[in-house]
Length: 237
Ligand SMILES: NC(=O)c1ccc[n+]([C@@H]2O[C@H](COP(=O)([O-])OP(=O)(O)OC[C@H]3O[C@@H](n4cnc5c(N)ncnc54)[C@H](OP(=O)(O)O)[C@@H]3O)[C@@H](O)[C@H]2O)c1
Image (cartoon, rainbow, N blue to C red):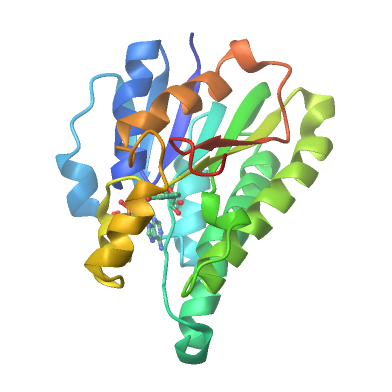
């Protein structure tokens, strides 16, 4: 496999695992994260470039697009999950969640296309979540943002098919990470144990997601577009 891939959210648990793995499959990776400190300490053989970009700002998005090389693939693994029952949901958190999880992937792809940074035949992979299709207390903002992302990805897949550009989502179940640690802080030990039991193959690790991402970036999936692939240890069976 070969090609130049931009991994957004490379400073996160899942994005970091993806970025570390892709060079072993033959891809060249450009790493992006919000935190300069975390990005600087990332040491990945085969990582060509690092771009610090806070995607909550217009400047951050513009800097990322301007600094990106020409791309054969984009992995959008940045995300936030403000959990709260709707009664306690803050408007600012709801807006930030939709902005980063649902709006930013589209705006970034728009700007990368306008800047001619996405090559014909490229593959775009968005990190969604099983939460897009499951109801759970406290998840209204997060689940809604991921459902919007999946719906938008299907439309983008149709729009970009004439250029041979594919657009797919991966929907992980609960993966041990900084984000799931945040989920755990909001749940009782009993609720967490019950949730873990709903995974026939057990709860996942960030490394359990990387194979599916690499497959969707590769030519092995050249006839697959507009799908959401669950990677969830059987949670949604
Ligand atoms: N963990 C799970 O159980 C799980 C399950 C299903 C789906 N997912 C999805 O998988 C993706 C990765 O999750 P994760 O578990 O790896 O989360 P994580 O460890 O918390 O990482 C989140 C990433 O998002 C970046 N980020 C947050 N706000 C940003 C902003 N304003 N601008 C740019 N980057 C920003 C962070 O950058 P910095 O670190 O540099 O601040 C970090 O790289 C997310 O889309 C998440 O919704 C996770």
